[in-house]
Length: 150
Length: 328
Image (cartoon, rainbow over all chains, first blue to last red; front, side, top):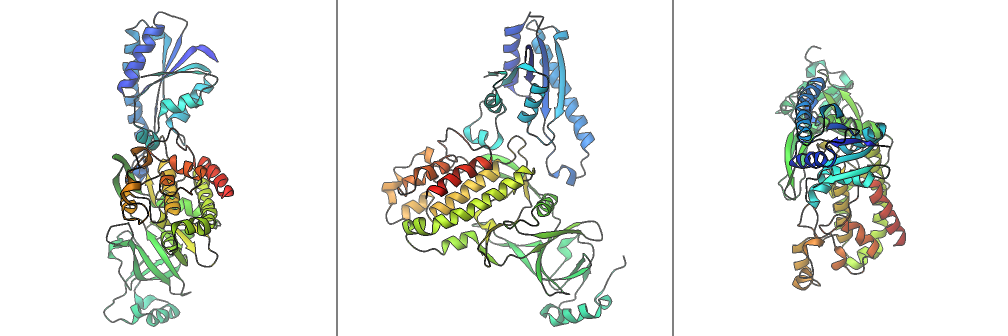
């Protein structure tokens, strides 16, 4: 694990904004830190193809949205002293996996030492039904560090 | 292909048609469908020609949701193969999208005939599922030809056990639980293959009259929960287990009308004892039936409001249930 490599899971939630602010405050000015801003989006719903949907178009639209999300995230980090050259973008679809499984796969492949995620504060029922990426990451941690920012 | 009429039927098929009440009825003008795109045009006495077979429509299945008047499903005719005389259920393509509210949470649901076809392919030799064949009509529409299971719905099978709950639980339930375990294992096979059941309910298990095996039916519902794709199946399994353990008593009104329970027992229940996703069901059955073993009751509590931990997979649920069954 490379402790200077940080993976930040970026979503379009207020929790992500808080996480970015926290990371910026904690590591701003530390030039040896490398940050990957990652946005993972789900596969289209089952009726997508039934209604004539084309996967390439779906991906294109999702990746355009992701790019905007990631640029906004970079701006937030920059405000706290993180240099743009410390930051790289990555976005992808969770293919045949959940979003958290995809994040974990990227985390391990890239040997990131730390993953950062915002905590949305969902109810128990929501967590059971829709899942919680932050809880899944915490439960899967062992050889990496998880920062869950509430 | 040119339109086929009754006059074009092979002689033995025309003869079989005449032998059936639908063929003899002068008010029925049999049409032959090679394209099922407009399934609403298909009526009693019509013939669906797919897989090189002539299927006579003899009835339509009905939507069996609890508490709702049964509605005929025109995309699911009951048919008879005019060559063999064997009856089947045919499912035609009907794409439907809707939202369901579960405990105030909205989930996007779909009819997904293609998913059902994939399940049928996967389980074609599996004893704990209904079986069927996927074919295409002349227009390329998917048509599922399903074998009819000779048996009873699980809920009716259980309701027929009329003894006191304690007798039911001690005499009948252990055997029922063993069979249910095979049903749970069967669902984990789907999940391992990236498929879900989609509509796990107590009336979607049939008890085969011949061998008593529990067999899952109806796999065409699907839902979109990307981060927890099997959560609803899991909750469905928990709800079926609740039914099997509680039989007729697992909702607050059931407690009120139960001669040995009533207000006194109802007053012992708190919110934590109710279902995580639908608070009209009591998952802490141990408070109603103290002779339910703690380990078994604890499995139900994983689906209650007060649970500190969820099941993440059907295998986890299965393992706990198998251990509890062993101890009964």
